[in-house]
Image (cartoon, rainbow, N blue to C red):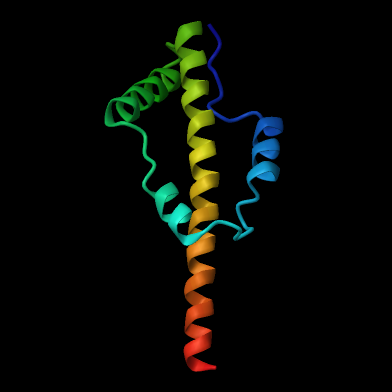
Length: 102
């Protein structure tokens, strides 16, 4: 069995990045704070960790490889959404500081 490279397909990553536009701060502060609360369930985080360890040991089954890819895709989606949320909140804070000092 060949070892699976634990990376997200470049096409999927590019599509998600263009769709979410993580550097564009077009979320409301309330929506941004809500997105920052999204987390993988602890059981899912443990399962992903176990799959990544098995991948490094070259012991993944086809089903496990598919599950790992799914976890990585969800992780990328969460990372991009949370990057957008952080950008929105940081820009909002800078705008508020600028009004106070301006």
